[in-house]
Length: 132
Ligand code: C2G
Image (cartoon, rainbow, N blue to C red; front, side, top):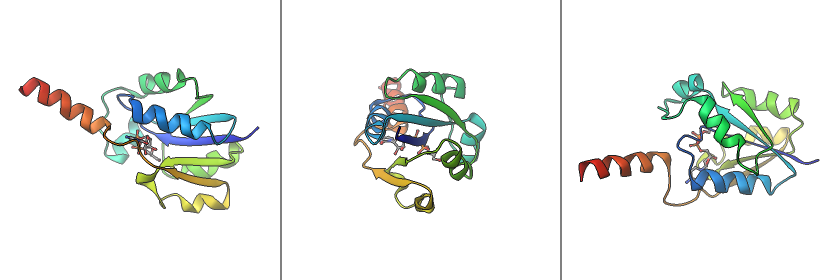
């Protein structure tokens, strides 16, 4: 069984999140998604709309996703890859090059982001609606 892993906050789950999970799954048979905890988002400087429990449950409900784990630290990726016997690590290409050190442990793939959608843009669009 070929195992794939990807990491993210997945707040205000949207089409771009769906497409990266779909594409990540296409690299193997089993997809693990490490969802950033609220505490880790504080470290990342990301303010989330939904708490970890909700974000994790939404990701787990996606048919391409086989397992959800917590992401609590930048440093856990190597350990996760070893522990879960991961074959492919996938991230959007906004992270291109940032995780190349993982090439010692598994295949590393950076995929193009889905254009014109992001949690930030969704929030801005809603704010603009209120202003209109
Ligand atoms: N993404 C995408 N297209 C978009 C928006 C996001 O492909 N339009 C991808 C990102 O590239 C990332 C994943 O969706 O691979 C999750 O995005 P975020 O929830 O913003 O995650 P991020 O804050 O980048 O956290 O340790 C890694 C971090 O946890 C990644």
